[in-house]
Length: 128
Figure 1 (cartoon, helix red, strand yellow):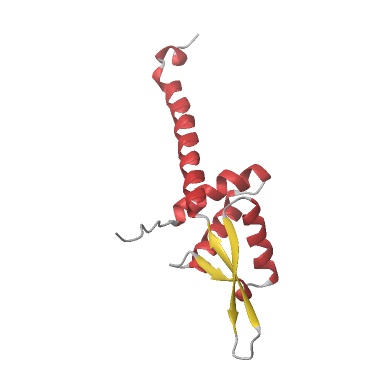
Figure 2 (figure 1 turned 45 degrees about the vertical axis):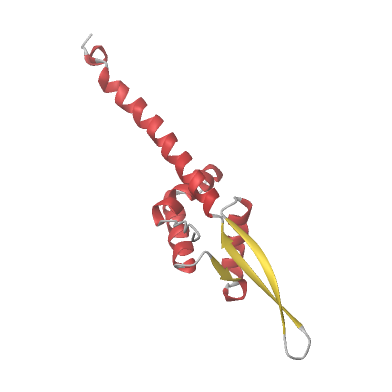
């Protein structure tokens, strides 16, 4: 059997980031910008090479690593001259991203249910 491919959508990424970064005071617009950047940067892959990042981008990736959104790994490649070349990668933690996105959906559903309950009780709208 083949490997199951987990796909992260832009919407999943926005929800996961909103669930974590909004608690740190970041506004929705900034979170959506970060989500678009991450999805653009990773593209159809789940990992990217670290040496493509600028210093500011790397700082953002470290922040997202602290939130469990991204992780790192490295591999060593032997060169012809006998030296080792270390490659550092950033990887999306897809399972954690989807878990955060689902938790965001559940919290939204609860809040939406609370909003609907106001309209369900006709006595709240009676004039006194």
